[in-house]
Image 1 (cartoon, rainbow, N blue to C red):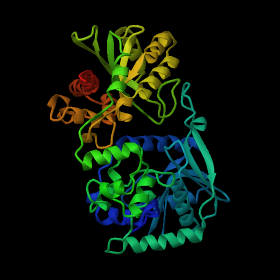
Image 2 (cartoon, helix red, strand yellow; image 1 turned 90 degrees about the vertical axis):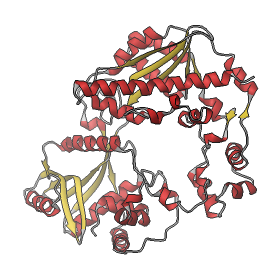
Image 3 (cartoon, rainbow, N blue to C red; image 1 turned 180 degrees about the vertical axis):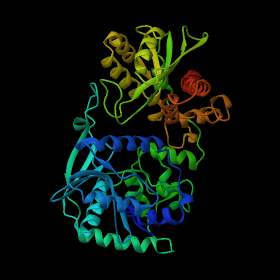
Image 4 (cartoon, one colour; image 1 turned 180 degrees about the horizontal axis):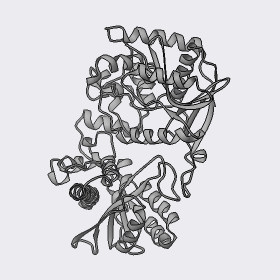
Length: 492
């Protein structure tokens, strides 16, 4: 088997992950990374123009064809070659941007991230090693990534959109030694015996959660230390794991972790009933006034901003659901908005309609207010005509989330999570009207984002069907908060 720069980086993270990706790929957890891949592709394509005209080596299953085409253009220096492809002793790489000068080359590795990650240095180092082994004079290596402070004003300016940072590669002897180890790994039919480590989860060294984590923990008791929630860090969980304190009973017998985690474990281990802080909940309920509105936004993110005044990866609201009571214990009403502005600015129409639907000084309930309040403030900055009204909505928000985050209301079925997707079925088990799995096409937020971005390419009939299902999903989000409030109101 051959090594590529992506395989090399996987192996640097974990040799077992590399082996599993070669021999047992079917046991990997499927990752929801379509949007990440699409953003990466768009950023990569956009970066190609950083130095003016360029030559593109088209991706081909026949790697040798890509290598030969690269050689042809390397001889015609100076030029810029994108996806320049090289191979040395079964080690293959394509360089995102190769600046091919008379006196040598410069390597530019493009990432859609907004910050530098340690694994990117390994990526660049591997490419540098291959090119040097082929006799090329690698003058410098650079990391190109997204400037999250960039604000779009007119056409996106590449020079301002990207940050370019010179990177010092790892020592070439270190790369060579790593390659020898990784080649031995992928050419060995025996699965490596490698234990769990900090590299199993996203951190400064690695940029994603390992898709084989469930496979590697398959023989642990259920539940175990890795099922503990309440912001117990992965590093802390590893400490218990390395001490062989893995089951809930093991952990609790040693004094536990923290009060919230301990409640989760005790509740499940001992089948405890609900924990309800009646006074705190009643105090919260006393702050609500009518008319009472229940609000939820849906939004999408793109790496390269499409709307003036926005920055990379800014959340762009395109939809909301609004349930509301005009009077206490009276009829429940519903309003909604889903933009049909697929190529412009969906937020403008959304703000106009939202200000019509929620009167000034109205009490507004959300679940996890940081998201809605931040979106409202961002849109207020973009649209001065709606600024006062949007900020008024933000200032009157009441949040259900802290009740469950702070375990003022906790039942064991929440499983250590205060996410509404866990709280709702825990409070209302076996209620099909509250089951997101019963929805069509759109079942969660990232699916709603992908759905909206896909609408611009669909036929009228496809748009109508997808829009209907998007509206049903968002409606359930606010109906969920209505039901949760109803449950809290039953507390005596």
